[in-house]
Length: 89
Image 1 (tube, rainbow, N blue to C red):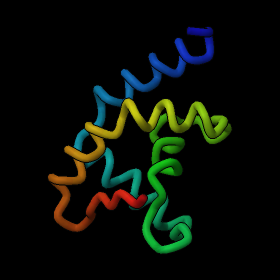
Image 2 (cartoon, rainbow, N blue to C red):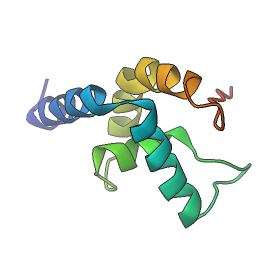
Image 3 (cartoon, helix red, strand yellow):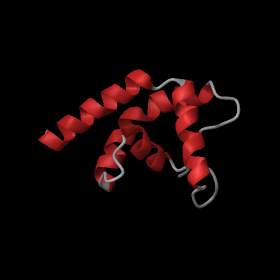
Image 4 (cartoon, rainbow, N blue to C red):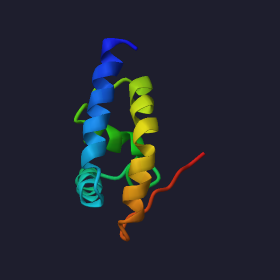
């Protein structure tokens, strides 16, 4: 694993430790204030970039981080009645 992914893995672990429903809801609301994505709502990859504080992640890094955060994000969304997690195909 190269240094970038090692650093990204550390960022993912730090985010997972803070991934409460309130933390996720605040991030989603902030993104919604910036505007909805095509199709409505907030794209998961946009949310991951926001949570990691790195808007310049390459697509492959974004997907890598999302795959690791997905279970915790799903669990957080289950606790937020006003939001829902939608997984497209």
